[in-house]
Amino acid sequence: IDLVVKPSGGNVSSPYMYGLMHEDINNSGDGGIYAELVRNRAFQGSKEFPSSLEGWSATNNDTKLTLTKLSTPLSSALPYSMNVAADKSSAKKLGFSNDGFWGMDVKPQKYTGSFYVRGATKKGAKFTASLQSGLTGDVFGSVEVKSKLDAKVSQKDNGWVQHFFTLVPKVAAPNSNNTFVIEFETKDLAEGTASLDFNLISLFPPTYKNRANGLRPDLVEVLKELKPTFLRLPGGNMLEGNTIDHWWKWNETIGPLKDRPGMAGVWEYQLTTGLGLIDYMNWCDDLDLAPMVAVWSGLALDGTFLSKEDIHIAVDHALDQIEFLTGDAKTTKWGKVRASLGYPKPWKVRWVEIGNEDWLAGRPAGFDSYKEYRFPAFLKAFTEKYPEIQVIASPSIFDDMVIPAPAAGDTHPYWTPDQFIKEGFNRFDQLTKQNLTLIGEAASVHPNGGIGWDGPLQHLPWWAGSVAEAIFLLGAERNGDRIIGATYAPILRSLDRWQWAMTLVQHAADPTLTTKSTSWWVWKLLGNHPIKETLPVSHSNGEIGPLYWVAGKGFKNEKIWKAAVYNSTANIPVTIKFEAGKGLKETIVNGVKKLLGIPTKATLWTQTGPGLSEDEQYAVNDPFTGVNVVTEKKT
Ligand code: AHR
Image (cartoon, rainbow, N blue to C red; front, top):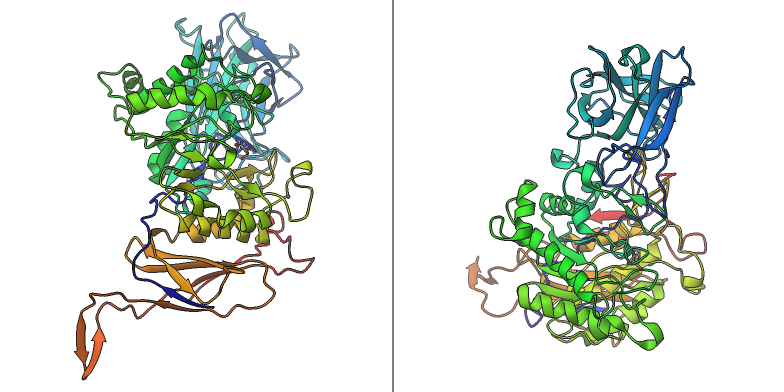
């Protein structure tokens, strides 16, 4: 195939072509990128996932642990706590352990911890906090924490007193089967005190950029390598909640952890919301990501939705959310709240997305509540109050919705590889300037020729699926003036508890299990070479395929050609000419006329993966064997 890349004549591309989206699915937040090591740290619960002592055990037979709902709770957000009492009068030492998000990584580094306790202890009493092997009980590091309950305790916080400590293990644990333990002596309990109550027991390893309540650095680094430009937060079903009163209430995710009640997650577990709205914004700041903020559209996953009369409730919440993020710290109600939490400087929000996948529900008997009044109510309110913000509807023109101006749409192809080629590569050619579209989620999830959504997802991203995603993305890049950006979803999966197998990066408590999927590789390659402006390409082939491409100019004015081959059993010889264009200066070197500004060097990055044989075609990057089927070369 002979290709000629023209020097000009293309379109200016979105500078945000590749991003990230995050929701707490697969323990991608709690137990994932949110660095907290203690599972069920505050006994949060809901109707769907009642409070429990899951994750907690007594360290000996003398200790009795009871989940309690005191009349003097730590806060109204955290009504439950753990009572720690002696099971026998002869008990000397009481203690409890937490097994973390299925283990804890222990290294000689600084761990920062805290816990609230209520009760009375004698003068000089102390607690011992330690990191121990869950298998042998070996102690890798411990610290004594002086009890503050030996003094007169203020009843201001119902008698709860927070204790802080740092813990530096002397040695690294040989594996991640470790626990966090707190112990104390019964002789240290004050006269007449038989037990102590504990809550919000927290332990963080060093976090990314050392943020308090921050992110797990190794996972952030893996995402950073993709060179993302935006974060869709919080994306996905989590935003909506299972029932109408359980949506992701942003205002309950801000402020001190003791004031966050958590929420019933939609992916089979309770969420701490420790990773809350401000924490998402810090994530954006630390990775230089533009926030794409999702607001609740008044729809729940069970299909219920707010009536026309009540939709203003959701609209008001959304306007407040954006005022909280962007409002002036002195003159706006929610800007003041933000400032009071230590963030006087407003954030810039470029996009607001109204809901998530609203084409899937909220349409009783053909009446589309989103189209009829929910989306219009949001669009009107946002256009009036925040005309500079690009509003994005959660469906796109590909979901049977005419998106009213000036809004954009969002499309979520979860397809087979063949669909990505046949329906995907040319899909965006039909977009007009009025049809700005976000690819808010995308992934190959089912193999070709299977039963699709009637069966399970593939167990891990596989090379053919990833190459198909790449070709779809080349199609998006060719239309980069009408695409807002693209993100794979979901991005993270705990190998210990997950609901959605097809995920960009797999992780566990043991950082050596972090695995970049085949899709991570192709999204990285594309995201690391952004195109500022497309360039037209003429070619000798009548039809495009099995080689697919896009060409353009990069942000350093370098010329870029990106291509992928799908489903070919033969090599495809290619020649590419980059036409120089007019206006280049001439010079004479040794009597020979030369054009200045013609590059003499090119760099080629290639990724190759397994072939098409029965054995090879579903090969994956396997977290447990460490096999990586993708080879990247730079020449
Ligand atoms: O990414 C997993 C889920 O897929 C998201 O929560 C939802 O938006 C989509 O259906």
